[in-house]
Amino acid sequence: MTPAGVGTAVFLNCPFDDAYRPLLSAITFTVSDLGLIPRCALEVDDAAENRLDKIFRIVGECRFGIHDVSRTDPDPSHGLPRFNMPLELGIFLGCRRFGGRRHAAKSCLVLDREPFRYQKFISDIAGQDIHSHRNDPREAVVAVRNWLRTASGRAAIPGGAETWRRYTRFLAELPRICRRMRVSTAELVFADYYGAVREWLDDNPS
Image 1 (tube, rainbow, N blue to C red):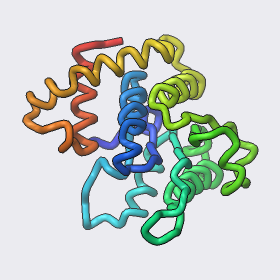
Image 2: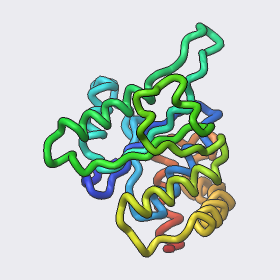
Image 3: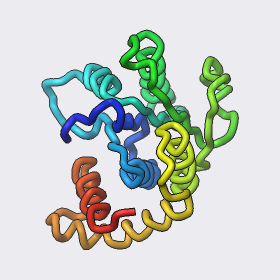
């Protein structure tokens, strides 16, 4: 994926497991439908680049960030939680605070699955405005749309209900797009999915 300019790029700091995929897919579509460019660690699979260096690079190239801290439950296999998302949120906030004038305008949305749950495990961000998606892709779409309406300053964007309607239309047409791409929906990697989103949006401008 071609690096995006700071003013249009949105860093997606979200879980990548199969259970979260409906939310990640909905968020990726919403960001794209509103005229911005989603970026995440999945966009490039390069073993020569350290994962944390990749995160630093992408954060540095994004003005906006969406950080979902909902996956903090202990892993059944070893009993320990996963803290990659809070770590990457800290990197984003640190870049905004100490990155000089270039990064001072960074803005982020923090998501969790329940209101105020985050206060039990990451109380230092209690002053932030946290939004809940309740593990519902539709609620995630509305939260992302409403935040980007304010954060991006873009006025002429569809509302949450219209964005969700467009997303469901896209999902219905995704198998056809995948057949044209000669890849199954189960095989889609992030670059494939984003390519399918871009193709649909080119044919269906908002």
